[in-house]
Length: 209
Image 1: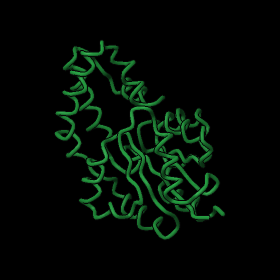
Image 2: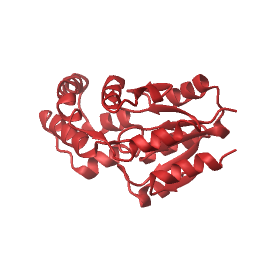
Image 3: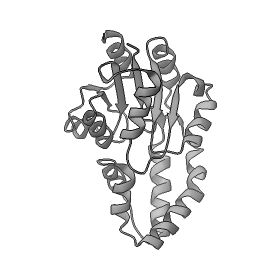
Image 4: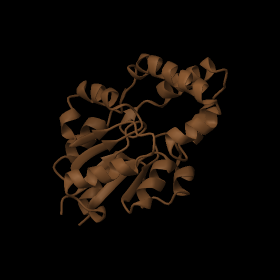
C-alpha cells in the first residue's frame, strides 16, 4: 500500500504566523474589531472558516465586505512569508518514502507561488487550499488520489482543529510544536505523534509498515 503524507501548510512548512496574524488583525480593524495573537490562535482550535465567522460576529453583508477587504490585502502580507529553513530538506527526504500532499486554509495559488520560489511545487501530488467547510473532504480526496488507506497515511499539522479532523477520519496525526499551537495545547487534541523536530517526521514515516 502506498504511503501518504498530507501537510497543513502555514506553521508546518511555511513560517507565516506573524504575516498572517498581521493581515487578519488589519482586516479585523477594517470592520472595527480587535484581534490579539491569542484570539487568532484560538480560531484554529476548530474549523478555521466557521470559527473566524463566529469570532467576527458580523451581519452577512458586513462579513462579505470584511472578507472582500481581507482578500484584497492578503498577498500584501503573505508574499513576505517564506518556508522554514528545514522545509526543502524535509520534502527532499520524504519524497522517496511516500506520496506528498498539502491541505490548507490558505488559497492554493498562494501556496503554489511560495513553493515555486523553492522549486518544490512538483513534489506534491495535490495542493488543496481554501475549503470553508473544513478539511475532511480534501483529506479524503488526497487518500483517493494517492490510492492510499488511512493506516498508511499521515496528516501533519500545528493546530488542534486540524488534528481533531485528522483523528475523526482515522489518519495517523502528527502534531508539530513549531507552529501556531504549542505542545500543551496540541497534546490535548491527542495526536498519534507529537514532534519537536522535522527529522522525527521522517523517522515516523520510515518506521511505518
